[in-house]
Picture 1: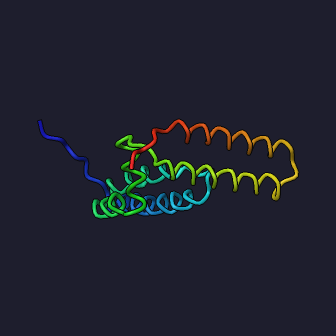
Picture 2: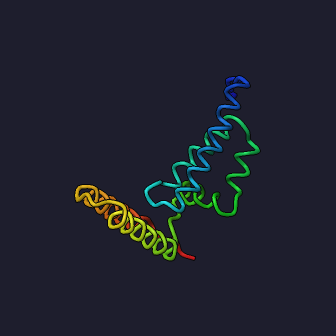
Amino acid sequence: MKEQTIPISPFAKYFYLISGFLLVAIGVIGIFLPLLPTTIFLILASICFVKSSPKANEWLRNHKVLGGYIDNYQNKTGLTRNAKIANIITLWTSISLSAFLLTEELYIRIILLTIAIGVTIHLVMIKTKKV
C-alpha cells in the first residue's frame, strides 16, 4: 500500500522552515543554559524541517555537533561520562550563580535548587555511552 502525502502550502513550508531555524537557535542556546533542554528543541526543529525542507533536515542531522543530540536520543545510546560531568558542572555553576548573585528571594533559590537536583538525577540516570 502506498503512503499518501498531503500537499503543503508554500506559506506552511516557510512557516515550518522559519520555525525550524528558531528551534535550532533555542537548542543551541540550551547547550549553554542548562534550564533549556537542547535535545527536544532540535527534535522539534527536525520535525519542522521534514515538513518544509529535506535539505535543512539533512543539514541538522549531519551537523557535527547538533546532529549528535538527535542521534543519541533516537538511538538511546546515552551520553559519555565526560558529557555527563560537563553538563552537571555547567548546571550547578549556572544555578549557583543565579541563586546567589541574581536573587535574594528564598523561594526562588529553593526552586532553582530543586531544578538542579532534578536535572542532575535525570543526567545520572541516562545511560552512559561507551567511547
